[in-house]
Length: 71
Image (cartoon, rainbow, N blue to C red; front, side):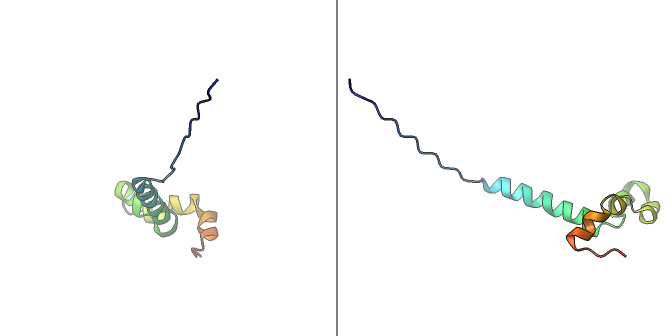
């Protein structure tokens, strides 16, 4: 009985588009956690957002872990 051999070659390559999308998400996340001092919510809340700093308070420990001083 002849045996048939099947060879499967699989190439795994991360798409450049996926890397670009993740880089944009990372950049926005870095801005949000590190540099936002009420800027994002000021679009909706106005000057009150700079006084409340909601994102700053919610991500406070993450800011310190990432090396951002905030005191």
